[in-house]
Image 1 (cartoon, rainbow, N blue to C red):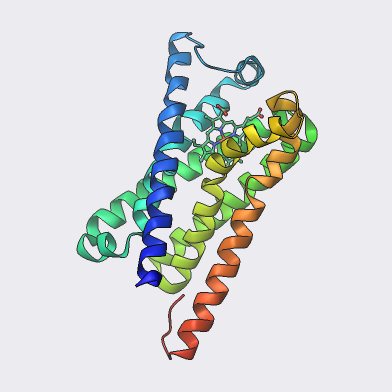
Image 2: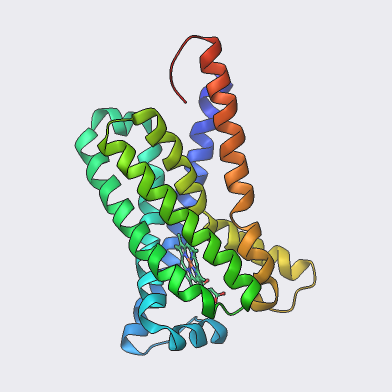
Length: 215
Ligand code: HEM
């Protein structure tokens, strides 16, 4: 019983946080009308230095963040395979456009070169993992597709973890977002990737004991 509830609760929390962060990012649409309401001046400076990639990133990445969690609902996937495929395609295109935007924005990151390095590395891994997961789905290698998509979304979810870590950073004595962002550029995604790696290893061990070939 507990084993069935825990993943459902975790997925529910993931959906709520993802949708909340994606919805909050919609304020960046105002920038297209020169309205900067609710936007940190340091982030405004990043947008002014690299407007096209930064806005492509900030407007498209939330689509991947909001769509992603629904791809992991086994019931939805099995009952509506066509919907899973189409929303998966939108997710992949959103990750690729937003990832290229992120990679081009990273050198201008408000936290300087160390933050740029962390975000740049994340962008490269995000792009590579998502593209590989998509290729595996096209080749019908679904076990490996599912595994790589877990890693892809662990990185997409960095957007949520980063925003949860900001108040923790202030509580630890950092004075601004840009002063903590050289740490956030790594701490927002490395733990997610490690958790997915541990969870997937545990699941494959469990299934190999019961004779199933799944992750
Ligand atoms: C996973 C790979 C991602 C990378 C490499 C990345 C990279 C970046 C970078 C370099 C910036 C500029 C930040 C700064 O100057 O400190 C930024 C800002 C931003 N990113 Fe991402 N990002 C990623 C995922 C996402 C996702 C999934 C969302 C969805 C909500 C998102 C939404 C934003 C927004 C809204 C900003 C503007 C700053 C803010 O409002 O907090 N990013 N990102």
